[in-house]
Image (cartoon, rainbow, N blue to C red; front, side, top):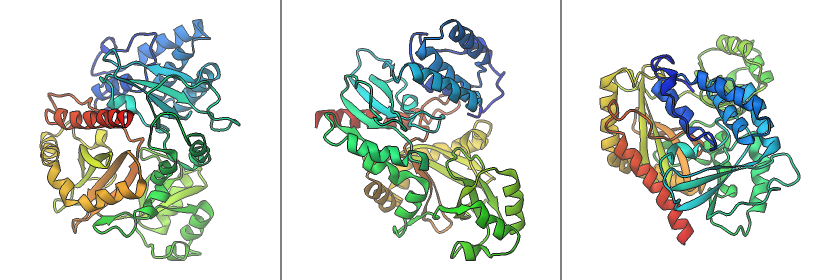
Length: 416
């Protein structure tokens, strides 16, 4: 995670963790990261405790998340493996007790982008979250006893690595005793390549197909042996490349010439990439505006808007924390989101109908001619209400709508 401010802007002593006996999830680490709190010292304390308590799976799992939050992903994954070798099921108790319901979340081992970070959205709710780490490679993905629960959510992000597992879960969840949110037969509709093809030919919606292309093919383009259109029909520079299986902008670059492709490949070790046509979505002022919207049971809700002079926008480095004018424009978007949603109703309805997903994040923009431009759809997008309410006074009400809508979805499914 990137921090909007220097890590030493607040003392480590202000870091706040849940009770030590609890499974933390991602939420406390994300909250501290957003606030600019350095929790390195607390992580060092966790390491010392874990070494003294090698059989404490929950402690190891918390340490794994801390390490990945501090950008030590490889070490974090190794620690996660150690935790999962001892225990596959972890409970994050609701902040408000007694809990109204218990949600069983089927998740997969992996980095912070692998699963839906639902605890960030439901941080202060009355919903118990049960994390059940399925075995993606074992003969039986649900080999451990299923805890008592009220409903189930397939909280696994769609990727090439999870394709086979999702198919297996579809068979396992047939005639499942509790309602299922984001049923597995729909999850893969959000995978980058699948989604970009699924959402073609929707009036008012534009999405550039994310096509697989190999390093060998790109090498041929880079040295001039092939034209880009020879490899990918109808495509021309500028293009966007990113390695398959990556998230958060890793390896994502806009390339304008074959020579830039050669430089890009020299910096990358991967062998398969996603290629998309670059679409210029800058406004009349030259600024780019990217919106994050979440669909809950088919209804859209605003999460945030990032504004940047660079086409690749990440909210934490778009200057939103430093620029009051940008925050004011975001507030207008949040307060008038009903107009945005109505303007793009046909596109949003089509996304819901074509994906079949109950809960889905959308990163999007508006093109120069007013179309709804989709960059990515993904249930595993981070949705939260952790921004400072003094700096962002207009976010609390919209995010309360998101939290309430998801809670209402869960209650409706349990009672249906």
